[in-house]
Image (cartoon, rainbow, N blue to C red; front, side, top):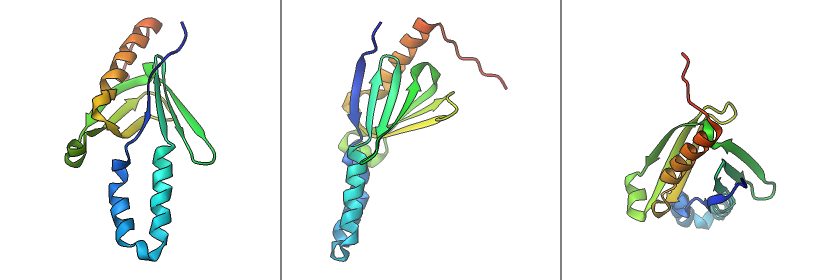
Length: 139
């Protein structure tokens, strides 16, 4: 069965709101304008792609780096909406995984209407059933 894209997107620029305000206040120094531009480009070029089997995170402005997480490795999923994010309709998705290279993944400022947390959870359950994977905690 071929891998299909379930969702693809990037974080909202609302996560940089504080940087943009400070850059606007201190624009007479010129340097904050470049800091705001760098943050804009970093946020715009960090792409999340949820497929039926993996979560791919591609980031970088000039050089691209892609980190891949097999969905059956997701142990815990949490959705958070701070007050200011609730006002603008975005949320954070936090995942704890059993992957040694990336045990903690934080996806920041994703539009709430997407329902990314539910999509990830559904795909995790489907792929675990397909592969016959079960979670065992050993202490």
